[in-house]
Length: 375
Length: 75
Image 1 (cartoon, rainbow over the protein chains, first blue to last red):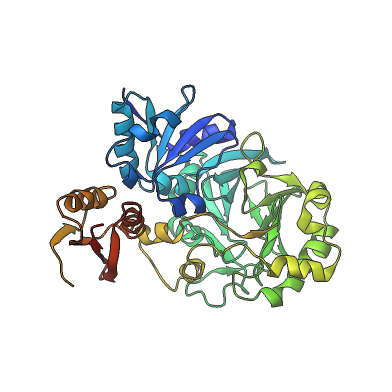
Image 2 (image 1 turned 60 degrees about the horizontal axis):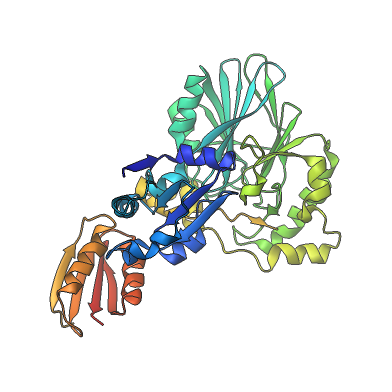
């Protein structure tokens, strides 16, 4: 039998289409427990590759006959070895190209909407890590919001749409992933906007993003309206795009809300978070479609792979928006928080421009899920 | 530390550091110590877990200029 290669893009299609897949994850147990490829109809077997050096006979009976089998490891090498052993034993298997490293970096562009004046809005779903970023395209111009460090993906995408990147935004100083905003702005000569209260320590120049700022994209303009919405960080800023979409950054997600502790000030920022979620957003139209900067679980994906929901629906269904008692809310967002993202302090320093790790180091820092929310 | 065998696995990518470690261990007898040097970062967790599952003992582990060093006593 031959060994096949499956790309992160192909696996992503299986996630979105809720297809079946049997994953043999050959990383060690703690890495697997911490973070794995999630799919509604995926089945898993975790056996570290180093327990299979003497042969795969012992696990052969555990594979279903009627499902595609994918072998996964951290960086591909071990999965190739195990896939070859399984193939020699008579199974048809694939390995994941580039391993979890590539899985973490893959971005799936999903079109969210056509905008009023002929523009388009795309969501870039970083399926392996749960990060969401956005591109607004209108009349030959593009704006990018909350870009990941895979800067070329956005630059190439804009080029394929014959658009020039004119504005790059970060809703806040990210702690879970390294921003590609500055690099994209340097490559394209676009303006890089950051909320100044989050950017007090940054060592590069940027355009300060203030409440009420309006930025136009394209000749028949798409309006991006900045709205100060502190809570996850002190500077966190939301955007209302084309009067239809509310980009909430890490403040409000589909099934959870932002955590206030990643800059070390949970107690101070609880009040801001509550004010934003229970007062500021409440004043907006319930028809606005919320586009967050993360998803936490694969169930939050819509049928087309996008992540979005009307604000009114979130006010009805999102637990974090329905905690009437202030003390209970304070407790929810400051106690029993999930573990903090891997290397989040180093990531913050990198996003401030204080440190410049190489690509391999950046990959290591970003290992694992995003963990920016509380439910 | 007293070492019976030395394995240089520097520059090797996963899974080779462990494949070589296992081979070298197969040539030792119970109680003898293998010293391994590796640069693949994944080796840190993987060798530790492999040593446990194989019934060996990790006597010492240190890191020096990006080189991971392991002293493993055969079980």
